[in-house]
Image (cartoon, rainbow, N blue to C red; front, side):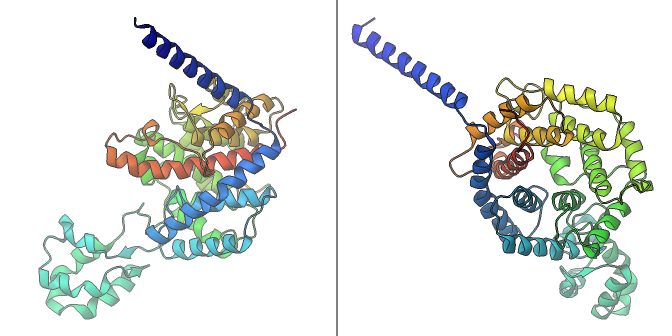
Length: 411
C-alpha cells in the first residue's frame, strides 16, 4: 500500500477510535442527578409547548399523541416544582374542554359523507340542499331531523330521509362522537388527576366517564382509536388490550376511596384476564404492569416487573418491541411505571435510564423516537409524517417518566 494512503487510513482509524471513545466517555459522564433531570425536563417544555399549541391551532383537534400529552407533561412538571405558566395551562385546559364537548354528537353531516356508498342514491339537487347542515353537530336524531325537514320537499323527505340520517350518524367509536376519542378522554383524566383543572371538575369529568362507560363493548373492552389501531406494529386484539387497560386505569383513578368497583371496571378486568399476554411488546408489558398494580395480585406484579427489567437494553433504555433499539417513548413509559410501583431496589435502573435519556436529548430539548421502530408503515411519506408524531410523543413520555423518578435514584 502506498505509504501516504497507509498514513491516511491509520489517521482515520485513530480519529474514529478517538471519536467513539469520546462519545462513550460523554455518555458515561452524563450527570444523572435530580438537578440534571429537572434541567433536562425544563429544556423540553418549550418544545412541547410550541409543537403542542401548533397542533391545536393547525389541526384543530386534540389527538391522543399531542394535546393530552401537552397537558400531562406540563401538569407533571408543575407538580414537581418546575416553572410552568399557569395561565397558559388553564387556557389549554379550557380549549380541551370545549373541543371535547363539541365532539359528543350522534349526528354530524360532513362533506366527505356525501361521497360515501350509502349516499350514492342521493340526487345532486338533494345534496345541494343539504349544504346548510354540513358540519353542524346534533346530539340526537330528533335534533338532526328537525333541521333537515325544512330543507327538503315532502317527497324528498319520504324518499331520502333514511339514507341522509344514516349517512350523518357517527359510527360508535368515531372521535366526533366520543369527545375526541376514548384514548383522549382517558389521557385527559389521568394526566390531570389531582389538579384543580376544569377537566377534573364534575361537569367535565362525569360527562367524560359517562361517554367512556357508554362506549364499552359487550365483552368489556374499549375499541382503540386510530393511533393504537393503525399506527402501531401490533394486532388489533393487542390494541384493544392497550386501550382497555388505559381506560380502566383512568376510570379507577376517580373512584371514591373504598368504593365498590363499578360494573364497567369489573367487566374490563374480566376481559383483560382472558387475553393472551404480549410481553415482547414492551409498551404492552409496561401498561400491563401498571394495570396489575391497580387490579392484580402481588405475584403477578412481581413477575411482570421482572419481565420489564429483563427487557432493558444494555444502554439502560427500552425498545418498543423485543430486539428493537431503545427509544425515548418506551423508556419514558417504562420508568414512569416502575416509579409508580415504588420498589426500593430500582435506583440503579433509574440511573441507567436517566443516563440514556439525558445523553440522547436533542439541542432543542426534545427526544427523537423514529417511527420506523414502532409503526407498521414503510412508505417514506407516511414515515415522515409519523416521525413528527413520535418525536412529540417520545419527548412527552421522556419528560413524564423522568419527572416520576425524582427523588428515587440513590447516590
